[in-house]
Length: 133
Image (cartoon, rainbow, N blue to C red):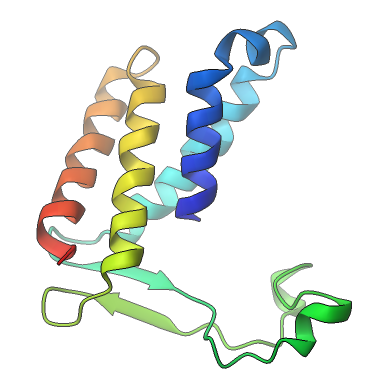
């Protein structure tokens, strides 16, 4: 999720004029907001972030014919383990990715919704300073 939010956010920053010209900026902002809301809900306190990561142990064969991550969620047969990241149970890469996504999105929303932008930046700083080792 964090990677997608970051990528969409930087596209909005870099190509705002072009995206606006084809009347798609509103849709892009909705997609970014959906992703950031997901991350915000996963950041339940200043010292806690919940995340899901596909375990490395999932065999590559599942990706050959059909990715286990594609399709409807109810059709997925891969485990979806939830991880709680805290200072005592770190997950620096996921936390850093989440912080970066929130920071990038805060730039996108700065001129659109300044209150939301400030909220994103505040959460980004909290995740970065308290959960990234």
